[in-house]
Amino acid sequence: MTTRQRRGRPSLLGAVALLAAGVLAPACSSARSDALDSLDELPRPPATEPSAAEPAPTTTPAQHECEVEQWATKSYRPRPTHGAPTDDPFVDAIIRRGHLRVGVDENTLGFAALNPETGDIEGFEVALAHEIAARIFPDADTVERIVTVPVVTSTKFESVESGTVDLTISANTMSCRRWDDVAFSAEYYTARQEFLVRADSDIHERDDLAGRTVCVTAASTSAAILAAHVPDAERREVADRTGCLVALQEGEVDAYFGHDSFLYGMLVQDPNVEIRSGILPAEAGIVSHYGIAIARDQVEFVRFVNGVLRDVTADGTWDRLHDELAAEVPDVPPASAPEPEYRD
Image (cartoon, rainbow, N blue to C red; front, side, top):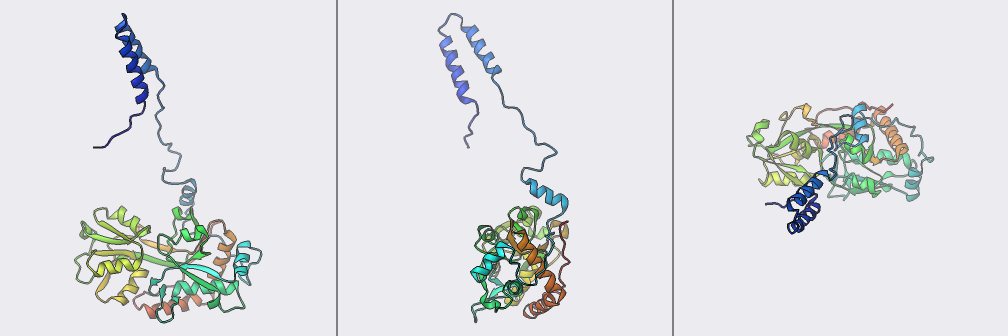
C-alpha cells in the first residue's frame, strides 16, 4: 500500500475544527452548513490540458524544430581545411595545448580497439581522428598530437559536454534529442542495429524474443529501440559493448542487440556466434547514422571537421580506411562514404 499526500488537507482539518466548536453553539446546524458552503467557495486550481500547438512534454522546442526540419543527420556546411583555422579560439586552444583529445571506444574491433601489443587504440574511427589532427598540426607527426580517451556509451557525450575531450568518434548515432546536448559532424558511417545470438539459438523473428533476455549497452539507442519494439523481452543493460558479448558467451543472455559495426568484429572474436538480420524492420529506427560529437557551441570547429570529412572522401582516404577495416573484419560489407547533408 502506498500513502498519497492529499492536497488541501490542512484547510479541511481547519474547517472540521470550526464545525466541532459549533456543536456547542445553539445554531449547530446553521454553523455546519455555513462551514461546508465556505469549503465549496475555496478557489480550486484550474484544470490544465496540454496545448495541441506545443511539443510533447518530453520534447524540447529545439528538438521539435529539429524534427520538423529533419535536421538530425544534417550538420553545418564545411569550411576550408588548408591549414588550421587559427581564427577559431577553440582550435587555438588545441594548438596551444599541443594535442587533440579524442574520445573513442577501446573494444570495438576494426573501429576502435586496444592493440595489446602496442598499447594503442586503433581502427577506422581512430584513423579519422588522425586525419583531423593532421589538418590542425600540418607539420607534425599526428601520433604525437592525439591523446585518445576511452569512453563508453554512457560517457561519450558527457565527455564532450564537460570539455574532457575535444570530440568523440565512437559510433555516435545522431538524433534530435542528442543535438540538444552536443553538435554533430556530417555523417561518416552508416550502420544497422541487429541481433547477435549463439549459433544454435532458435531466435529467428521478433516473436521469438518474448520472455528472452537481450543485452544492450546502457544509454544507447539500441536500448530505446528494444524497449519500444520488443517490450516483451527482458533487457540487460551493461556499460560496454564487450560486456554484452561476454554475457552472451556465458549464457547469461539470449541475444545482444547492437550495431552491426560492432557485431562483425565479434564474429572474428568468437566463431560460435552469428548475426540474425531482419528481425526488426528499418521502420523501427535500426539504421544508425554516425556523426562526430563536438561541443554544441563550437560551430566553427564542426564546420572545420566537416571540411576534413569532405577532403578524405574526395581524395580516396575514406575508401582506403574502409579497405583496412574490411581486412581486419572480413564480414564487414562493402560500403562507400555517406553522402553528407547540411543545414541551409
